[in-house]
Length: 176
Image 1: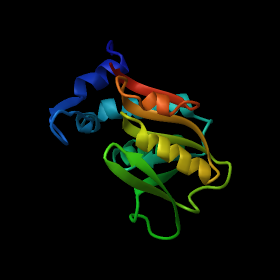
Image 2: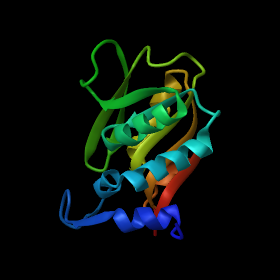
Image 3: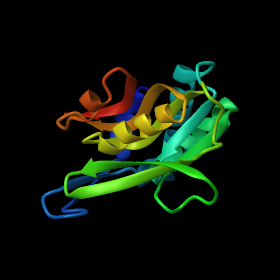
């Protein structure tokens, strides 16, 4: 294969205009998921970078679940979902954070990992970084150590990376 992984992923991304609202150019990752060769290469690449450095993978709802669960399986570690409020059964720990137009709350199970666990946080796209930043705070407040953040696509013209200052951030594809 002469193409780099980033080139392969770029060739599979689909732009959807005016979704979810007018003026937004949505980066659809579902064609990456539909291509077993490219999806597998993405997961193996993430695993190679993180092998031996994490105890658990945490994935942000919803597409972060797909990448995170596959990565957890590849690494032989557990997976923890970071979900919207009210979606997890049992006792949870939550964090409410500001969005552009309102607030949102995310949660994890209180017993999702042991104190001090080394957690890799995963999502599909890093844009403004609000949810990723909140997820890092939530996991750290739950006594985890967030060792890094992995994403398939980073929209570098938005402030997501800056909001994750102090964390190791890696994106397979950076859109400028």
